[in-house]
View 1 (cartoon, rainbow, N blue to C red):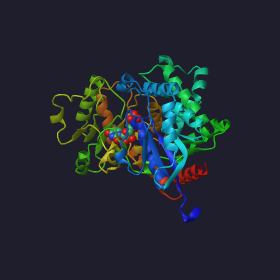
View 2: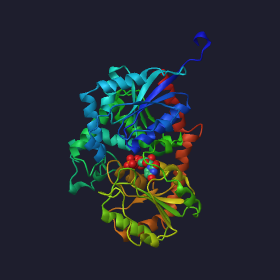
View 3: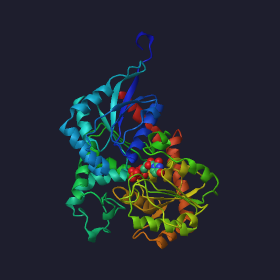
Length: 462
Ligand code: UDP
């Protein structure tokens, strides 16, 4: 300690991909690092910008993203990723200037220079700039360990002929990645397969170039997948591969990083409902359905007879900014159904009135449901959601998939199956799994808690 002063705290920089499902885990990770004594600077893009005033404990620096207005307006995640990387590669100087400014010690006396940068795995262009500045990067993987295994295996899956997918092989099992079938292999209905392949090749490169990978998962959920992943990456010379999540259990800051305003009136509505009686319905921040499917969902919920809380966010229905509920729907569900634009999801799932979750199986939603012991009705739409649903049904047994056409009678029956019949067993399993996952984060001997401390020691050693 020079001159009797406290040593300055080390600083971690974080840069999320600007989509809700990527922002949330990065900000939770930032919160967990901050709670363990690190100073944090958040780098963020103008596209889907964050609100610095909601996070007074962090410094913020804007990074020029170069996403063209038409790509930003369309909001397709794969196009935004490719456009951001292309713009940053073509013109790295503004990114370099932003990183260099974030690397400097704060004007405040308390926090020193940056030890490392956490980046989303999709930001290879940023990693290259950071390498030029001598700044080590750690990759945050916002999907599951199984999902990262699938990315690393993509070239092999093409060599062996599983990919690109054909209508005829969608149900073919992939024994190299059990329990996945071809249809579960990170496919996108809205982007070409070549674009998906390019994005995944970039993630693989970012992982291999990094000083470590931190996955938002828990050994309590994916011990076998983590073990296999260590085998897959054995030759890559990665100094660190950690399962340190679910991060939302290690830090709570969901409202602050929400891109849409949360409607909290649903919490009082839930307070008035019987324990375990409500089905929560939400398809995340990006998944969309046709107007006809929307009607079928509405009438399926209405005729199920069960109370429900349904998130109908802008653009949930393709081509509509705000979806129109069908005539007669509100009367049919009066007192039993609530429809809101955006929910405080983690709090909703933790509410005792919630007994089931109809989800698109985004990884955050899956983790949040598992973490609260809530069983799931799965309706995956794209990318990693199909494999998450597969794990929910086949590995953990805490839910089942609603396959095939969305039709009101099938929706009604699926809701009843979850909330009545078999749902009871799934709920019991979900509660046991939820406790194990929560313990891994909260107990002093929990694997994720110990891993997070190990991560902090590693950052301090850089
Ligand atoms: N979310 C929320 N309110 C809602 C719906 C979703 O706060 O009404 C949050 C949810 O808690 C999760 C994130 O949005 O953290 C969605 O991420 P996920 O990976 O589940 O799906 P994505 O939106 O990336 O498809």
